[in-house]
Image (cartoon, rainbow, N blue to C red; front, top):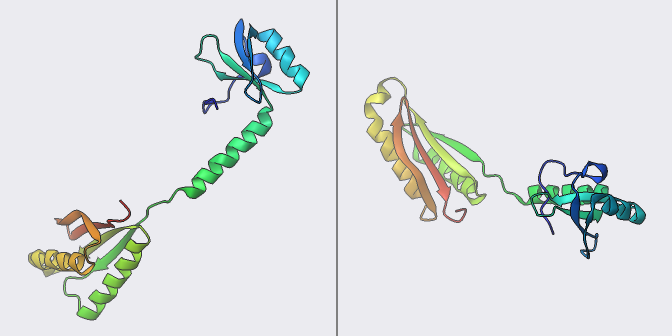
Length: 175
């Protein structure tokens, strides 16, 4: 199968080359002929003449049903988009003085996100005098990462950025 560029290829009367290499819809080569002869051959078969390799010497044209080709191409692209997995970034917010019950709930929620293949952003917002105790927040983040187990990787270690401590995690299976 030849590659047809993203912009619309030249069709029928738009092909102005003196000589072209002609291929039928089933891949049979008809040889090199003038563009007018190729156009008349396509009309005789009731199909379109499509330039598929303009950079070749001489350019390659194919006799095919262009509307059917475009329809099949759009179906293939749609199918490929369905197969793509979009990775989302989910966020979990902790607090500086989080209790063990709340901490365990957040860990379970994080495990659920990571098992789906999403990336995870863990943040702690420091308010007022909490800024003086950012080391406790970093400790909470490290405890959170270790509570998730061995199957996670720390993409970005806990770091104080302004009034927030941020850390990014992802599952090792998704890499």
